[in-house]
Amino acid sequence: MQQNRVLIAFGIAWLSALLLSWYVYKRTSAPQARNLASVVAAARDLAIGKRIQAEDLRLISLDRKDLPKGAFLKTAEVIDRAVATPISAGELLLNAKLAAKGSGEGLTALIEPGLRAVSVQVNEISGVSGFIQPGTHVDVLFTRVFSNGDAATATILQNVKVLAYGRQLDPSAKLDPRDTTRTTVATLLVTQQEAQRIVLAGQRGRIQLVLRNRLDDQVDEFSDPVESTDLGIEEPPKPQPIRPAAPVVPANVPTKATKADDPGHVVRIYRGDKMTEEKLK
Image (cartoon, rainbow, N blue to C red; front, side, top):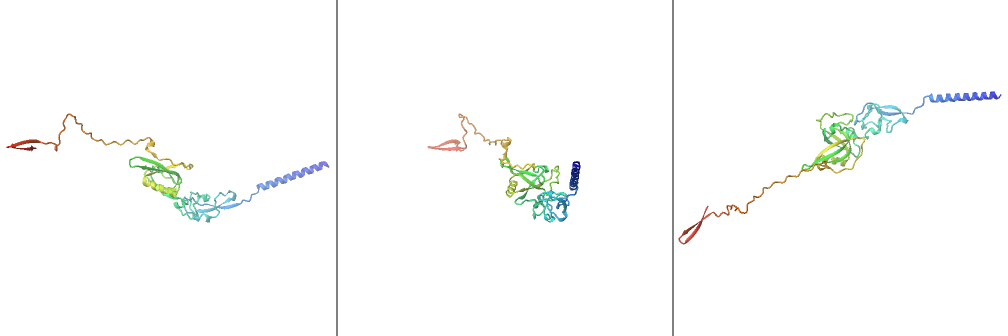
């Protein structure tokens, strides 16, 4: 009797384990219900500054738990907004990659509220051989030559973003650095006061752009201008005008009388008891 109870208990335990294993297997192998969302993506490559239209967009399905921050669920939320960063086909449209709504298109769409765009003329030297591209960051140097021929250079702006190089807004479009004959302009994103400093510097001297690493956002304290003496070059002394020395006359040599002091030859003439003098020239 005791043996039968043991067998029955063992059978019940074995059956329970079998049912539990089957239940777990069915739960793990059954397709899970997914919480999907339709997300706005690019239907084609979108260049920087382009104003987005309906035909530029498409919807793709994505798990809600995988939605990135700033994603859009409706196409109406992005239509007529401009692209601030180049977007590839199939890439999700994020708020950080688009300009503010109503900001227009092209260069004006890239100007952040409160900032200004100012252009400076550059060439292969002041433009770092064409390696300055839209999206890079530069420092602005100002050099002035004084009336005495001396010169001084100072850093007037640091870590300034380049919006455009010439008419190019897309940083992926590389210019040929070997084209040394190209003279163009670089458009910088600055504040109103910084724009005034750049315009004044362009009128009073020469502007040079210095390319910097995009990861380097450190802004140093402005130092004193660099002058020729800081380079170990001293200004040569100006030659003094040479004045002719006065002639030295020996003390025992009589000086030649001037014409006004020369009395000439005096001749005395006697006529009876009268005497007259006449000068012979």
